[in-house]
Image (cartoon, rainbow, N blue to C red):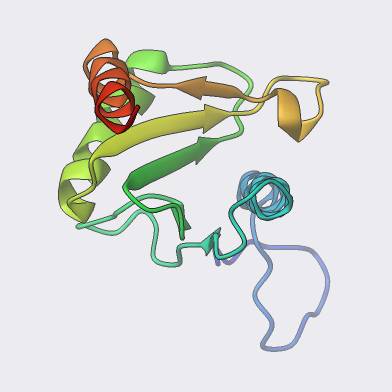
Length: 128
């Protein structure tokens, strides 16, 4: 949590910043969507943003998932971040899930590099 001045006496309780609340709300929505669509063990990964970060979600085997809810999209920066976290977590694939303005969570973008996409296709061919 990020302490922010609220103008109100909240005792010892910390208030999160509006940006952190927005990100947390989106993360919870993605978790609920994935749980309802075949990934019952997915959950938020706590400790995101630390050195050694391994992504925003746990419970999707083989994947590092970085979630973004920003007004402006930074595909290159986000892809680099997801790749760094994929290496940290020793996962086969990494992707960014980015919120689309004014759209349901199910319409979010999934962004991955061509390299990751090629590995995914090759692995799918081997399983067929």
